[in-house]
Length: 442
Image 1: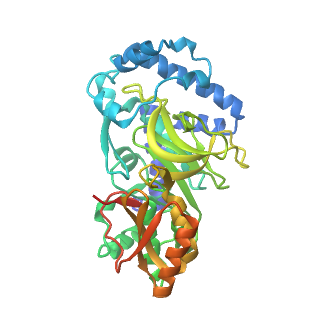
Image 2: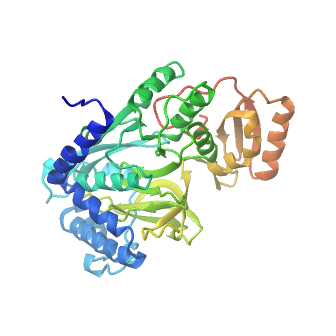
Image 3: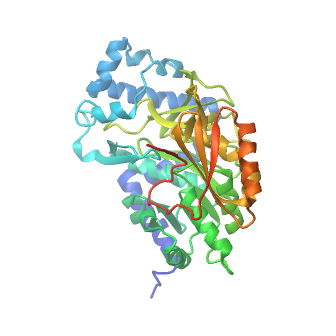
């Protein structure tokens, strides 16, 4: 009699039963095969295919979505006039407030049957939420994109995975060899139990928010024996700080792959094994990086604007995600997909100077990297523009002299901000949500 509890047996069930079912339901295997070939095409070939998808979604939105039809008519734009990406970038951007205002009627296509509507609730580090409809008709492609990203880790999509996140994804739980652990269950007291669960699952891939993976890494580093040994780790949902990457890599001794996605548009990009940036999968989304209203040049940081190429229920076109990223060039791996050089963080993960300029939190963390051995945790609190409190939980090597050096070093490196140091004794409790890198005092 077959042992259905064994990893090998369940991998066969996923590969030979679940994946064919997904093919019948949404062409999952066809999409995965096509993208496996497309990724090696030249950028010019990929861009032409991308442009066709953009023109299709804009024409669909113009024909069947009142909000977009009105906006395009006001601007005197006809979909047939969009012949290149520059033409498309004339379209107005969409923000979260506009998305919320048009959720109930004006933003929904009148030509797509209601059964394809899938309610999506977004949340970010800012704590703000919004609702929109995703497209069930595109679920096969979305799952295939996630699986393609998975192959870049060197691990097949049928292999065992443990994912730490806030929301449950039923398709992934039903059709894949994936086990979910809710961030709501995380606490210092529950960590030993969570580690035992992961140990039982023996995941080939461990995925989750970097702050939670780092907590697991700290637990494993402090243990006398390693409880589990994944082949790869995938981080998503928060900024993967270099301190997180280093502690996770040290604890688990395996490569880490940063993945980027958003509830509004689905999976966006991920690192390959060369780690020279994140490849944007243009089958599902078009990404612009914009600085001062213009497309950023290679190496420049700007805001991320995303267009879903698959959501015909409630088209999301030129949507301001609220993220900061650096535009990349190409990757030596040879893939033709566009590259995001690095994710700088969320707009909410920034502080303001007294003149109103913003400074990325990532740069502030990097400034304090030289003191890493003296710090167990670092956070920032901004009570007013131009001033921040640096909040730390010290390590055993910390001293008052080190504290004075932190303040003086920070003031030399970041003269536009005044600062003070707050020494805490315990790391803040995990809340079950994505960790905010900065707190704004009321």
